[in-house]
Amino acid sequence: MTGRTAFSRRGVLLAAAIAPLAVACTTPPPPPPPPDPLSELVKTALSDAALATAVGAPETAAARAEHAAKLQAEVDRATPRVPGSSVPPTTSASVAPPPGASREALVPALQAAQKQAGDLVASTQSYRVGLVASVAAGCASLVEALS
Image (cartoon, rainbow, N blue to C red; front, side, top):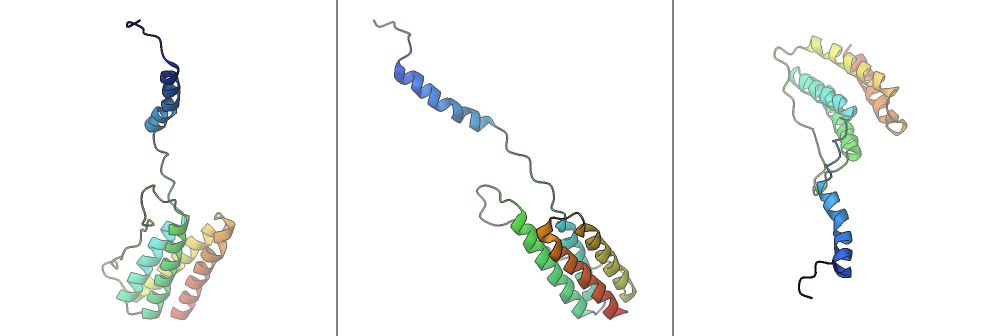
């Protein structure tokens, strides 16, 4: 019986056990998650902090840097980690102030940031509303302090 081509029971069981692994290895990875809506608030806060530093408003710069840090912490917490990565993703970076930065440009920038955060309050998840609303209120108070 040397020319036998019939499958043995072990061969069939082994093939059945390996088949799902072959399918799992060829499945494409899931698409990346959409960008976090708070990421834009982080960029704006960093930009405002750089502008405030450039025009000599250190309290405003510190407040906007704190907004950026708190918002970035929430973005990092909510962003799924890539398998095999032990470092949480961050997008924080220092931002250069715009050329020709002036103190007169700071108030409109803060008003725009207040509107941006205020507009996001209505569409953000309920557990994030307090953070986003406090950023909007903080921008409003900074505008009042500078006026």
